Length: 241
Image (cartoon, rainbow, N blue to C red; front, side, top):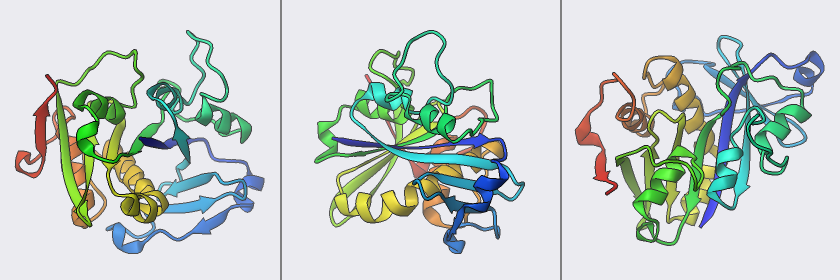
């Protein structure tokens, strides 16, 4: 199993010299139902920044991980005061500190996280492991979910499963398709899903797109949130026990 994490967190406005050095990227207009909702930028060193229509900046990064432990600590935005963790494990903290980017939310120490796992067969990954991936949890964390909420799609006969975390500011995509991972998820969709998720959390479950997949994801995420309406017919639920 190959694991990737895509992380996103709101930050204070970067320094002028950083903004002046940014190269703007093109986000597909048809993916959003509002013009210029997000603007994407890349740095020569490989990092990405986004800015929303309210001039809020976001730092984003993609990492390859080799365990649940490194998934868990790789989404930290501040160093844990209760445990000594290496810089290598705190990959997003290290990136933020290196660039002098200051997270806006000092009361929450984790970035929004989209975990992408590439597998040979979905059946080879236990439901408990799938849940931990969706929650970006470590091996030692309690299993907080009682069921798995997910939707599936197919590309060339290979399945991809999209799983919602429970109040965890995270979700997962587990795919059997290397074509889907390499040509759709990695370059574009993983970032789009994170932007949709950020907007969803900030706007009471609203999805800023008229496309089918984002709206299905919004319904899925709503199913594991408190007091948000959702259509149970548009997702699948499996008990963990």
